[in-house]
Amino acid sequence: MAEVSADAVTLDLLREARETVRSSPLGVINTPVIAWCQTTLPLSISCNIHIKLENMQRTGSFKIRGVANQFARRPSGGHFVTMSAGNYGKSFAYASKHYGSKGKVVMPETAPESRSILIQSFGVEVERVPTSCLMNVVNRCVQEDNMTFLHSYDDLDLIAGHASLGMELLEVVPEPDVVVVCCGGGGLLAGVAAAIKLSGCDDTRIYGVEPEGACTMYKSFIEKKPVGMDAKSIASGLAPPFAGRLPFELCRRYVEEIVLVSDEEIKAAVSTLYRSGLVVEPSGSAAFAAVVNNKIPRLEGKNVVCILSGGNIGKDELANFPN
Image (cartoon, rainbow, N blue to C red; front, side, top):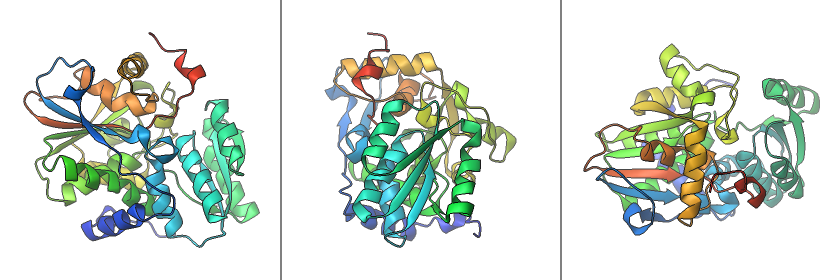
């Protein structure tokens, strides 16, 4: 398959994807944006922050956006394989059931067992393997079983679908000074950043947030090429084995900086959000953790948007976080 360049991501492409996502039979939600000042969340900086509640999205995370655009542009009844620590797999399984296609999710052994069970409940097969073997198993499925690989972050249709979140955000906060987004493989960050910059917000600063133990995009920025690492973090959804090539290109073009948060800061963020009535998983809390721990520069007096990207955390998992 020919490699797609960042130039392929145009405003027209993103607008078309937005309509596809909006009208998708999967029922993607235009999730609420709330003002930080309307919550009990603590804030030590004087600025105007809005929070995009993607933890309330169908299937519990933003991933359904990209999946809606991917499935709309693939033949129905196909046999697809993907790799995912959970959230993409959940949306993929939900879409597979809806579209009547066969599917398989190759999952890192470190992902919670509850995620595997949930994905299997949609009639999709799950194979758990060491993180370093994910792509090998996917390639085997493609070659031996004639499956079609749907990438969970390095895919043009997926990124264009995720960009719908950026478009929605601008309808509520038309000219944000700063937007803070979590980053794993980089699909969400790339899509949101492209949507905001291509919509004419030239002065908006967009920050990606990664865990210290899974900082593939941070390292890729330093190396000036997409790199991999043995990623380990409580935020399993932000710990893919490598940064995506297309997301990297788009992030280099549109993202100000990648900042890092520790697993302890992520855990504390999950607890703080929960105490304020927001159920957000570790991966979904990274951007919030960066804001409350003053990792984002020059926020005083600014209009800021922070994305809470997912809420797939079970009661059993929540019990492991500080009160």
